[in-house]
Image (cartoon, rainbow, N blue to C red; front, side, top):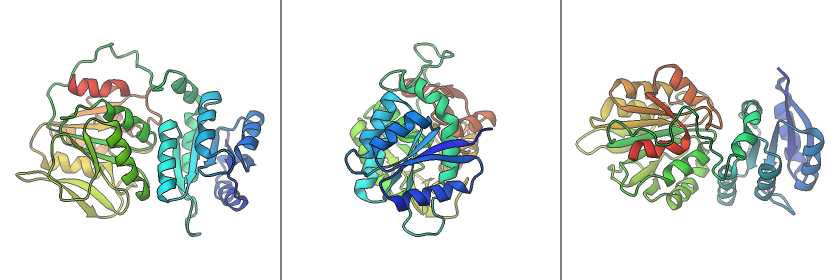
Length: 343
């Protein structure tokens, strides 16, 4: 396998050097160039045709969001945004993820574990490049309808009383689309999306504006209410369902599960063990396997379990593992998920 080629774009010479150093330790990655501004980057993209671009959110003359839009329009390429963990930085990065950025990584505040997750993101992004142009050119929503599905999907066998969703890489864009199609009186819905802690408050607000239902960041202790969607906060706690006469949300400390905290597996498993009504579990695009085992437990407990299909997943990782272990009762393209549940 050829090494993944990377163009590093950042106006800070120091930051470019730190990113290059983090990537140089992986023999499967090759930094082919660097640029200090979007204009230089545009020229180098034409010359080098990199597999992946790392892009600073905040740059002079043309910011990273404007340049990302041009990349996705003229030369669709996986882009990883490099962001400050500030409120403005988080808002800009979420906008980038909605536009089509592959993922985001935080600028380090200390020298320990500097850009530790970046090499893995780069290699996964490089594998996704062949499908980027196809997804982007398929229309404003950039979603392809799977040929295996009919124009009008069969509806769910039964209307759920609770919905749980897990997602990671590509999930910001996917959740924006799915939740925009939820009705205002949807069943209580719990979501774990892998995002840095600084981003989830802003993301909940963005989802709330896009959805007819009310979307909030979970605080812990809330009783579940129809028409409400609860997003797990990023950080040091898992979100799970606390069973009882009135099911509620609990945020609990604990070690990472399936490499994450909050973990989709923890949420799904708690529903499988504690919820006595009709539940629906949905696993969307993302790297790794978080959520697959928990979704299997939900299926074994009698819940309806859905997975995003390969054609519409930015990264067919989490849904693939869930499908392969028998956790998914039905795979659907992204633009058919809400119709299947509610039509």
